[in-house]
Length: 290
Image (cartoon, rainbow, N blue to C red; front, side):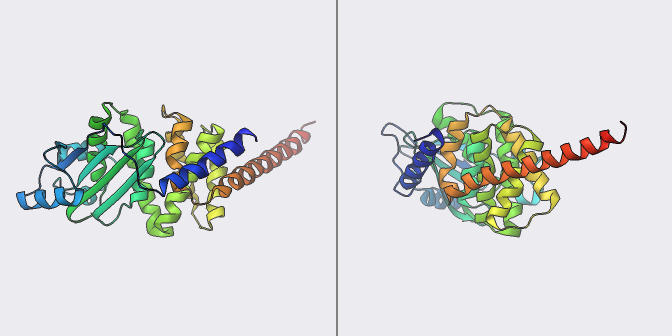
């Protein structure tokens, strides 16, 4: 069995594991990051939705300034709002469990969008619950999730990775409004998987994979949207993320692993045809001056 086939088998086994209840670390305490602007009634409601236990959880506030600091240059002001209401509970899971997200009163960002963006930020193996006292878009909640994860894992995620995660979440949400959330999330995950598998780092080498990924999923994108996804992919490729770890967090987001193989084969063929056409044009052009 070659390396690529072993990776596919491992991915399928991991997907099966993701369908089972997530196992948390035996010694892992939960971190609950609550919106600082919650009223006392909202605070009680949110803790109940999160199933947080004030007696055992570490409770830390997330402020509107935290949200603006992370997302102010990315997310429209109306989606961030003026108060910090979204809250999150993060519990570290066993290695290889991936990222599992549940949401309450979040009406724009889906659990899969959160999971994909969090993998970009460098989050690994965590059970996450996001809640708000009233329906909100959920974009601002990313700041609280990351703050809670950093506290739970005892680590500091890079600013560039967190900014890329915010950009990914917004772009995926915008695409979801056009092609549907499942298709948008899977397309971004396929592109990230291709980056991890084939070490794609520049715009020209990555763009054919975006084009072919959209074709595989049967979605129509404009050239501008394809370029936006490609530029996001280049940002992700330039982050200090371990390709294997990134890939392991994505397996539950790509529904058909055969698509990944097809994506590579078709995109590579497309790139070869582009190179061949260019070489033919160059030969013709140079022939004019002989």
